[in-house]
Length: 499
Ligand code: C2E
Ligand code: SIN
Ligand code: SIN
Ligand code: FE
Ligand code: FE
Image 1: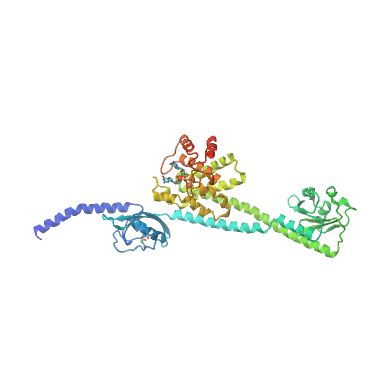
Image 2: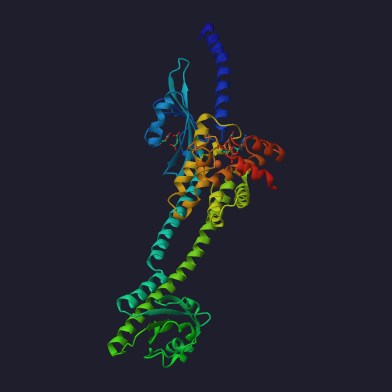
């Protein structure tokens, strides 16, 4: 080797050393990033993957060059749609399921350009969002189940209504068969008293208050002896009635009491009254028995129905427990907002009461308030929990949360009346809100109330992007937005109350 050649090599090494050092620095830094980070060329070839990406995604060593191709359809339509805009320099965020790993990832794709402004590829920053996705899936499943249960309930409730059934039965007996008046007494299983449920053809309504002990009066006798009691001429023996005074102006002559028996149990008594003599031949008595059987079956079904209704009430309670659970879980995700949902719910109800909203709406207001930010489940962590202010693109995603809530909750019938708050709580009085830009009283009152409360509570809590405000500052802020962001009437009521 000549002297000059040796010198040349040494010189080269000297100039390479800082380069090598900076390469080492770069690689160390790259590998230290805890988010999986992948560098791709414009054809989606993976050029480099940092340590986290290699470990979690099982990608080969640091410098892969050409080896792995990331198919552009691999991430679905979302990605393809984004690709054109990515090439123009707009970063994209999308979610991605990796079936082999059974994991969900959130991928942030950041486009790269060379000094001539040519698109040269992408950096992917990938975060594991499996836990959040599983939670979302669980909620979706619960939503579906609630729906199925609701359908069952609807089918049951449309099938039988005792009053309706018995009323049409009496209608048949009176108008079709030509009996002047009829009534059904039901045996109250708790008190063992016969109580009036429906009647037809009476001149007075006093009968509605009938309550007879078993064995008492002719109806009681029919029940206890389980046989039809017939009185051919009431004018000759009126004493069999506890209610005889009530019948003074009725001019009844013929009377029948038929026991209503289903599955061997006394359900009640059917009584017929006629203002003319009526011969009780065997055919007539047989017919009466058939009618009584029908009535007994209807009552039996209806009792079953009532039991179902009762367990349905329990079901509703179970739904509400589910809703409270969701809302707590949502608060937990957005750690800083812990307790926010419960607080705004109570506050909204207080103002609603003060403003004279009907009690029967409260249950919907409560559910709506508990679920108001349900749509934030669709907002990725890096936006929801971002410590700084949002970019235009992130804000676009954030603003979808009322619409998302609407889409999630609308299919559940019993939550439909509760949609106003989740859907309209970011509308503003002057029409500059979202999602629809509703104005003034176009915005449902409950949402107008909720908007004040939501802002009050949001400002009173620390957020990742700012510390809590003092109460005085908040009240001042809300007062200044009356008639702009908020309904002035709501603000007035709000400021008068004690918080
Ligand atoms: P949120 O935190 O529950 O806030 C609800 C509403 O309270 C906001 O609706 C806004 O009207 C009011 N509010 C909350 N914080 C502030 C504040 O610092 N200053 C003022 N003047 N008002 C405030 P908005 O603006 O439609 O925001 C909806 C949601 O978007 C917020 O719910 C929050 O989750 C998110 N968000 C809003 N701004 C930012 C931000 O700068 N950074 C991050 N990471 N998220 C934000
Ligand atoms: C990638 O998705 O970026 C690479 C891995 C693959 O396509 O399977
Ligand atoms: C990527 O697309 O950057 C890698 C994600 C993957 O294929 O798992
Ligand atoms: Fe919201
Ligand atoms: Fe909120």
